[in-house]
Image 1 (cartoon, rainbow, N blue to C red):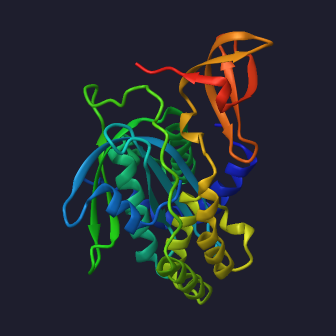
Image 2: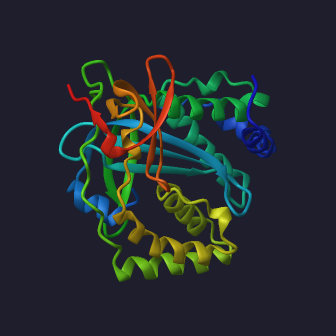
Amino acid sequence: MAVTNERSAFIRDFKKREKELAEVAKESVGGGFMTDEELIETLELGDTKKQFVTKVSRVRYGNDKNKNPYFAFNFTIAQGEHEGLTVSQFIGLGGKTKADRQKGMKRLCGLFQRLDYDTTSWATDEIAVNAVEAADTMTQNKPGVRLSLGTWGDANDRLNIDVVGLVNSSDAPKSTPPAKKEAKSAPSQESKVSMESLGAKADEGDEDAVNTLTEAATAANVDPDEFETWMDLGVHLDKGSSSDSEEDYSEYVGYEAVFDSEETGELSVTASAYDKDSGLFTVTDEDDNEYECEFSDLTFEEE
Protein backbone atom coordinates (compact mmCIF):
# COMPACT_ATOMS: atom_id res chain seq x y z
CA MET A 1 0.00 0.00 0.00
CA ALA A 2 1.39 3.40 -0.99
CA VAL A 3 2.47 5.71 1.83
CA THR A 4 3.78 9.28 1.99
CA ASN A 5 7.49 10.08 2.37
CA GLU A 6 7.00 11.14 6.00
CA ARG A 7 5.18 7.93 6.81
CA SER A 8 7.76 5.89 4.90
CA ALA A 9 10.56 7.41 6.99
CA PHE A 10 8.73 6.62 10.21
CA ILE A 11 7.92 3.09 9.09
CA ARG A 12 11.56 2.53 8.10
CA ASP A 13 12.72 3.48 11.62
CA PHE A 14 9.89 1.54 13.25
CA LYS A 15 10.70 -1.60 11.25
CA LYS A 16 14.13 -1.79 12.93
CA ARG A 17 12.27 -2.90 16.06
CA GLU A 18 9.76 -5.24 14.39
CA LYS A 19 11.33 -8.58 15.23
CA GLU A 20 11.55 -7.97 18.96
CA LEU A 21 8.20 -6.18 19.13
CA ALA A 22 6.43 -8.88 17.12
CA GLU A 23 6.55 -11.25 20.09
CA VAL A 24 4.14 -9.08 22.10
CA ALA A 25 2.23 -7.67 19.11
CA LYS A 26 0.80 -11.15 18.56
CA GLU A 27 -0.38 -11.53 22.15
CA SER A 28 -4.10 -11.06 22.74
CA VAL A 29 -4.77 -8.38 25.33
CA GLY A 30 -8.08 -8.24 27.16
CA GLY A 31 -10.44 -5.98 26.83
CA GLY A 32 -6.11 22.54 23.83
CA PHE A 33 -3.45 21.25 26.49
CA MET A 34 -4.35 20.84 30.13
CA THR A 35 -2.17 19.33 32.83
CA ASP A 36 -3.19 16.13 34.58
CA GLU A 37 -4.03 18.14 37.68
CA GLU A 38 -6.30 20.49 35.70
CA LEU A 39 -8.07 17.61 33.97
CA ILE A 40 -8.59 15.71 37.23
CA GLU A 41 -10.04 18.84 38.86
CA THR A 42 -12.25 19.71 35.86
CA LEU A 43 -13.60 16.16 35.55
CA GLU A 44 -13.97 15.85 39.34
CA LEU A 45 -12.27 12.46 39.38
CA GLY A 46 -10.78 12.40 42.86
CA ASP A 47 -10.05 8.76 43.69
CA THR A 48 -12.96 7.48 41.60
CA LYS A 49 -13.21 6.29 37.99
CA LYS A 50 -15.70 7.69 35.48
CA GLN A 51 -16.61 6.57 31.98
CA PHE A 52 -16.98 8.98 29.05
CA VAL A 53 -18.15 8.67 25.46
CA THR A 54 -15.49 10.24 23.25
CA LYS A 55 -14.36 10.49 19.66
CA VAL A 56 -10.84 9.89 18.39
CA SER A 57 -9.84 13.39 17.29
CA ARG A 58 -6.30 12.51 16.18
CA VAL A 59 -3.70 9.76 16.38
CA ARG A 60 -0.19 11.07 16.00
CA TYR A 61 3.02 9.09 15.56
CA GLY A 62 6.67 10.01 15.29
CA ASN A 63 10.12 9.67 16.85
CA ASP A 64 11.25 11.42 20.01
CA LYS A 65 14.63 13.13 20.32
CA ASN A 66 16.22 9.79 21.13
CA LYS A 67 14.81 8.37 17.87
CA ASN A 68 12.37 6.12 19.70
CA PRO A 69 8.97 5.67 18.01
CA TYR A 70 5.81 6.71 19.80
CA PHE A 71 2.05 6.96 19.25
CA ALA A 72 -0.24 9.54 20.86
CA PHE A 73 -4.03 9.18 20.85
CA ASN A 74 -6.22 12.25 21.37
CA PHE A 75 -9.77 11.53 22.58
CA THR A 76 -12.36 14.34 22.68
CA ILE A 77 -15.34 13.97 25.02
CA ALA A 78 -18.44 13.92 22.82
CA GLN A 79 -21.33 14.05 25.29
CA GLY A 80 -22.30 15.72 28.55
CA GLU A 81 -21.12 18.84 30.34
CA HIS A 82 -17.47 18.23 29.44
CA GLU A 83 -18.14 17.90 25.70
CA GLY A 84 -15.18 19.18 23.67
CA LEU A 85 -12.53 18.47 26.33
CA THR A 86 -9.59 16.44 24.99
CA VAL A 87 -7.39 13.92 26.84
CA SER A 88 -4.26 12.36 25.39
CA GLN A 89 -2.88 8.82 25.72
CA PHE A 90 0.85 8.63 24.96
CA ILE A 91 2.57 5.30 24.31
CA GLY A 92 6.33 5.30 23.84
CA LEU A 93 8.16 2.35 22.31
CA GLY A 94 11.58 3.28 23.66
CA GLY A 95 13.45 1.94 26.66
CA LYS A 96 16.90 0.74 27.61
CA THR A 97 16.00 -2.94 27.50
CA LYS A 98 14.08 -5.24 25.17
CA ALA A 99 11.56 -5.86 27.97
CA ASP A 100 10.93 -2.12 28.33
CA ARG A 101 10.34 -1.73 24.60
CA GLN A 102 8.05 -4.75 24.47
CA LYS A 103 6.06 -3.36 27.40
CA GLY A 104 5.27 -0.26 25.35
CA MET A 105 4.33 -2.37 22.33
CA LYS A 106 2.01 -4.50 24.44
CA ARG A 107 0.20 -1.34 25.60
CA LEU A 108 -0.07 -0.14 21.99
CA CYS A 109 -1.42 -3.43 20.68
CA GLY A 110 -3.85 -3.71 23.60
CA LEU A 111 -5.25 -0.29 22.71
CA PHE A 112 -5.50 -1.19 19.00
CA GLN A 113 -7.27 -4.44 19.86
CA ARG A 114 -9.86 -2.65 21.98
CA LEU A 115 -10.50 -0.42 18.97
CA ASP A 116 -11.20 -3.48 16.78
CA TYR A 117 -7.78 -4.00 15.17
CA ASP A 118 -6.54 -7.60 15.33
CA THR A 119 -2.81 -7.16 15.92
CA THR A 120 -2.45 -10.92 16.42
CA SER A 121 -2.89 -11.34 12.65
CA TRP A 122 -0.28 -8.75 11.66
CA ALA A 123 2.70 -10.27 9.86
CA THR A 124 6.05 -9.56 11.52
CA ASP A 125 7.32 -7.48 8.60
CA GLU A 126 4.03 -5.52 8.35
CA ILE A 127 3.60 -4.38 11.97
CA ALA A 128 4.89 -0.85 11.35
CA VAL A 129 2.79 -0.36 8.22
CA ASN A 130 -0.35 -1.76 9.85
CA ALA A 131 0.07 0.37 12.99
CA VAL A 132 0.50 3.55 10.95
CA GLU A 133 -2.43 2.64 8.67
CA ALA A 134 -4.62 2.06 11.74
CA ALA A 135 -3.58 5.41 13.22
CA ASP A 136 -4.34 7.27 9.99
CA THR A 137 -7.68 5.51 9.58
CA MET A 138 -8.78 6.48 13.09
CA THR A 139 -7.72 10.09 12.54
CA GLN A 140 -9.80 10.17 9.37
CA ASN A 141 -12.87 8.27 10.60
CA LYS A 142 -12.90 9.58 14.19
CA PRO A 143 -14.64 6.53 15.74
CA GLY A 144 -16.61 6.76 18.97
CA VAL A 145 -14.66 5.34 21.92
CA ARG A 146 -15.65 4.70 25.52
CA LEU A 147 -12.96 5.73 28.02
CA SER A 148 -12.56 5.02 31.71
CA LEU A 149 -10.73 7.90 33.41
CA GLY A 150 -9.24 7.77 36.86
CA THR A 151 -6.16 8.78 38.83
CA TRP A 152 -2.94 7.21 40.00
CA GLY A 153 0.16 8.17 41.96
CA ASP A 154 0.77 8.72 45.65
CA ALA A 155 -1.25 11.94 45.57
CA ASN A 156 -3.76 10.76 42.95
CA ASP A 157 -2.45 13.61 40.78
CA ARG A 158 -1.80 11.68 37.55
CA LEU A 159 -4.52 10.98 35.00
CA ASN A 160 -5.10 7.32 34.16
CA ILE A 161 -6.74 6.60 30.78
CA ASP A 162 -8.18 3.17 29.98
CA VAL A 163 -9.77 2.47 26.59
CA VAL A 164 -12.86 0.33 27.20
CA GLY A 165 -13.71 -0.13 23.52
CA LEU A 166 -15.73 1.24 20.63
CA VAL A 167 -19.13 2.67 21.57
CA ASN A 168 -22.26 0.90 20.38
CA SER A 169 -24.97 2.55 18.31
CA SER A 170 -26.97 3.71 21.32
CA ASP A 171 -23.90 5.41 22.79
CA ALA A 172 -22.67 6.88 19.49
CA PRO A 173 -21.69 10.55 19.79
CA LYS A 174 -24.13 12.97 18.21
CA SER A 175 -22.98 14.78 15.09
CA THR A 176 -23.33 18.24 16.60
CA PRO A 177 -20.51 20.76 16.81
CA PRO A 178 -18.78 21.10 20.18
CA ALA A 179 -19.69 23.93 22.48
CA LYS A 180 -17.17 26.72 22.76
CA LYS A 181 -14.82 26.16 25.65
CA GLU A 182 -13.75 28.81 28.08
CA ALA A 183 -10.18 30.00 27.76
CA LYS A 184 -7.83 27.80 29.76
CA SER A 185 -6.02 29.30 32.68
CA ALA A 186 -2.27 29.62 32.56
CA PRO A 187 -0.34 26.86 34.33
CA SER A 188 0.67 27.49 37.90
CA GLN A 189 4.25 28.32 38.84
CA GLU A 190 4.47 24.86 40.34
CA SER A 191 3.70 23.24 36.98
CA LYS A 192 6.29 25.49 35.28
CA VAL A 193 9.01 24.35 37.62
CA SER A 194 7.92 20.76 37.00
CA MET A 195 8.26 21.14 33.23
CA GLU A 196 11.69 22.73 33.51
CA SER A 197 12.89 20.02 35.87
CA LEU A 198 11.55 17.37 33.50
CA GLY A 199 13.53 18.99 30.69
CA ALA A 200 16.73 18.75 32.74
CA LYS A 201 16.06 15.09 33.56
CA ALA A 202 15.27 14.31 29.92
CA ASP A 203 18.54 15.89 28.77
CA GLU A 204 20.29 13.49 31.17
CA GLY A 205 18.58 10.52 29.52
CA ASP A 206 15.62 9.97 31.86
CA GLU A 207 13.17 7.93 29.75
CA ASP A 208 10.10 8.76 31.88
CA ALA A 209 10.82 12.47 31.57
CA VAL A 210 11.22 12.09 27.79
CA ASN A 211 7.87 10.33 27.54
CA THR A 212 6.07 12.89 29.72
CA LEU A 213 7.46 15.85 27.76
CA THR A 214 6.65 14.20 24.42
CA GLU A 215 3.10 13.53 25.59
CA ALA A 216 2.71 17.15 26.73
CA ALA A 217 4.11 18.39 23.41
CA THR A 218 1.70 16.17 21.48
CA ALA A 219 -1.29 17.46 23.42
CA ALA A 220 -0.12 21.03 22.76
CA ASN A 221 0.45 20.31 19.03
CA VAL A 222 4.16 21.10 19.38
CA ASP A 223 6.91 19.22 17.52
CA PRO A 224 9.72 18.30 19.98
CA ASP A 225 12.24 18.16 17.12
CA GLU A 226 11.96 21.93 16.72
CA PHE A 227 13.94 22.38 19.95
CA GLU A 228 17.65 21.76 20.48
CA THR A 229 17.23 20.41 24.02
CA TRP A 230 14.48 18.95 26.15
CA MET A 231 14.95 21.90 28.51
CA ASP A 232 14.12 24.28 25.66
CA LEU A 233 10.95 22.28 25.01
CA GLY A 234 10.00 22.39 28.70
CA VAL A 235 10.42 26.16 28.83
CA HIS A 236 8.31 26.51 25.68
CA LEU A 237 5.54 24.36 27.15
CA ASP A 238 5.53 26.52 30.28
CA LYS A 239 5.00 29.60 28.13
CA GLY A 240 2.75 27.87 25.60
CA SER A 241 -0.43 27.96 27.65
CA SER A 242 -0.54 31.73 27.25
CA SER A 243 -1.23 31.19 23.55
CA ASP A 244 -4.25 29.07 24.50
CA SER A 245 -6.13 32.29 25.13
CA GLU A 246 -6.46 32.62 21.35
CA GLU A 247 -9.57 30.98 19.93
CA ASP A 248 -8.99 27.53 18.48
CA TYR A 249 -11.87 26.14 16.45
CA SER A 250 -10.09 22.99 15.25
CA GLU A 251 -12.66 20.77 17.00
CA TYR A 252 -15.31 21.97 14.53
CA VAL A 253 -13.50 20.16 11.70
CA GLY A 254 -15.73 17.45 10.23
CA TYR A 255 -19.03 19.13 11.08
CA GLU A 256 -21.62 20.46 8.66
CA ALA A 257 -22.31 24.19 8.46
CA VAL A 258 -23.87 26.92 6.35
CA PHE A 259 -21.30 29.15 4.62
CA ASP A 260 -22.59 32.63 3.78
CA SER A 261 -20.62 35.07 1.63
CA GLU A 262 -21.39 37.80 -0.89
CA GLU A 263 -19.82 35.74 -3.69
CA THR A 264 -21.55 32.41 -3.06
CA GLY A 265 -24.63 33.21 -1.02
CA GLU A 266 -25.62 30.47 1.41
CA LEU A 267 -24.01 27.07 0.84
CA SER A 268 -24.22 23.79 2.76
CA VAL A 269 -20.62 22.84 3.48
CA THR A 270 -18.45 20.62 5.64
CA ALA A 271 -15.53 22.07 7.60
CA SER A 272 -12.65 19.97 6.24
CA ALA A 273 -9.65 21.75 7.82
CA TYR A 274 -8.72 24.56 10.19
CA ASP A 275 -5.45 26.53 10.28
CA LYS A 276 -4.92 27.94 13.76
CA ASP A 277 -2.12 30.26 12.63
CA SER A 278 -4.30 32.06 10.09
CA GLY A 279 -7.62 31.39 11.82
CA LEU A 280 -9.13 30.21 8.54
CA PHE A 281 -11.31 27.20 7.81
CA THR A 282 -11.22 25.22 4.59
CA VAL A 283 -14.78 24.15 3.78
CA THR A 284 -16.10 21.87 1.03
CA ASP A 285 -19.51 22.03 -0.64
CA GLU A 286 -21.57 19.18 -2.10
CA ASP A 287 -19.70 19.47 -5.43
CA ASP A 288 -16.31 19.19 -3.69
CA ASN A 289 -15.51 22.88 -4.27
CA GLU A 290 -13.27 24.30 -1.57
CA TYR A 291 -13.47 27.74 0.06
CA GLU A 292 -11.48 29.50 2.76
CA CYS A 293 -13.39 31.47 5.37
CA GLU A 294 -13.42 32.68 8.94
CA PHE A 295 -15.40 31.16 11.79
CA SER A 296 -17.80 34.12 11.68
CA ASP A 297 -18.74 33.16 8.10
CA LEU A 298 -20.07 29.79 9.25
CA THR A 299 -23.22 28.71 11.04
CA PHE A 300 -22.80 25.20 12.39
CA GLU A 301 -25.85 23.00 12.28
CA GLU A 302 -27.16 21.33 15.41
CA GLU A 303 -29.64 18.50 15.73
